[in-house]
Image (cartoon, rainbow, N blue to C red; front, top):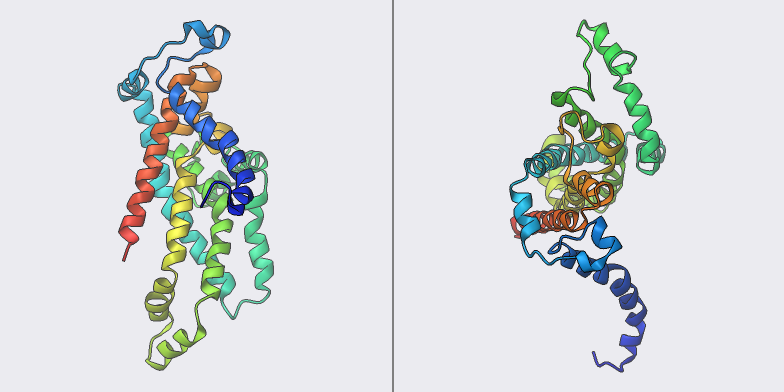
Length: 288
């Protein structure tokens, strides 16, 4: 494309906005990750120093960073597949020909996605309350002692995973419904003529036909789960004992609470590298 061609003028506004609001900030953040930019440098730039890989070396020796990395990985590995599975199950339910008013079910299942996370967190904190919460009342009915869901390091992250799955599965459900409705009916009719039951049709027709949809859903779900921040910030503040501290929350603390902006930028680019590697791996594994 030549510099003076009409196509350049058509894409120039979009490229200008991307440059100003995306590429330039990302480049500045990358440079900051190689400096000791902090609150003192904010007041006097002459105190800013170039420290190279110093922030990354500090990360490698930080126990808090490794704890946050472990918690984020746990959330991705457990919460991601669970969210995809629940989304697929809900899509199969609302797309079934025997279900009446499927649009109503789709709307109901999608409501948590558009609900403010702050409101959702308040409701789920009451559900998890160790004394008055609904979950502990339900456990008491069957004779199980109450659980401190958000105060026990063993249960805090599973509790956040459960809330996050409920909050977000509706979006992937809509994507799966679109994928299911694009599968030709003749494939199911041919499978039924060959004697395949409902389970075999799901295994040999539905799942292979949904492969591109699965790839899209798993990638966007994984990227969203790697960026875990709002749920632990609202529910536990990273506690108890850093058991729900995520890389996103650690980055926020360092950058906006302690003003270690250079150090926080290095966390951001470690997170970016993890997401890029995981995405590449998924694309590589799904490549025919």
